[in-house]
Image (cartoon, rainbow, N blue to C red; front, side):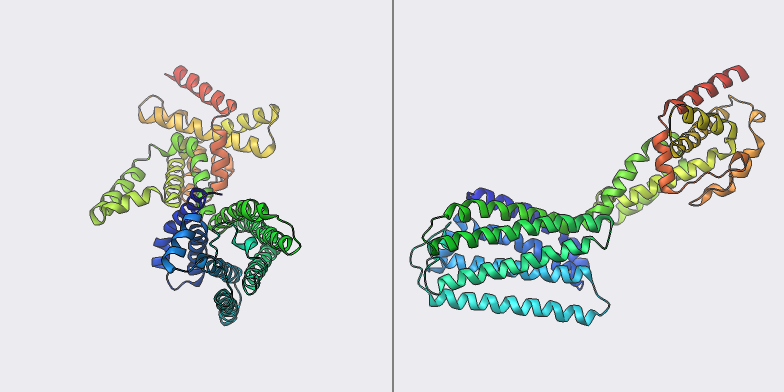
Length: 424
């Protein structure tokens, strides 16, 4: 691996660290947030330190050949300690004092390890600068040999411990946290393999074998993949809910365009709030564009308000015909129910649009549908036409939105259009 790859990896990790800074400033006292930021920063720092150009620069500034190795080993062990502390806080405990004690033990242990490594480096003799193969070149040098082994053992201990904890934890939870832990387990397994490969190369030197490519080529590749996966695993619980919200926002698009986009009260309310935010802070409006949860709430509210507006035109006969037709075409019961609801809503929206334009006599509407008005204001609707309920919870809205474009729904709308022309 050349220096560019190291710097690119560090840049990616530090970009993730920069994205966490606003949250860190707002929640500085949160130990979980501090540990997360420390892990991401130190991961990038280790890559930046391990780049051959950085190694040469540190050695030149300090004036000691291979001083960069001592600094890099210390940074890697600091990263290991921060990762263990993060896992401890992430898992949580009933006793906060116990969390602090365990975290302090890990930090103290690795602080002692870093101090011992520094003392061993100072006691040893490494006069020839080695930017990429320090481990194997000095594998047989007194004190330096012990420093290398201590570094690798401490790193592997943290890596294997974190891998085991993450994997065992995935069996107890679900959702985005479980996915994140699975990614973390794979990432830390790669990082563990990095230490194993390094140790094999060092042990090969003790036996007279030159397996340096394991240390200089394979190990850096493994740790790069491991760092990328572990960083992604730590960020996934934060991004996962936003991803779910974005997917839900997009899936609600067809239903929103059908009944929600024309809701003037929502548009006016959103415009007024945007104007007030812009007056207070011009940058806030740009930030709000990225707030997926807020946008999803707006879209869901607009859809529910739109459904309430057209609910007076609900016709149970439309829903029943669409439901039976969907079943006859091979849809499952759940899919047919969603298609029936979507057909009834689409026809109601069409009738409502014609009614506002004076195109239909309101007398042709089913008066029983007026019972639906009161129930549609909340998360779950009250009775619709025919005494049945229209579920406006978000999962049901998504299923209904997916069904809006079904051929059965389009057929119901075409039939209503033909009916309206005849009524004229």
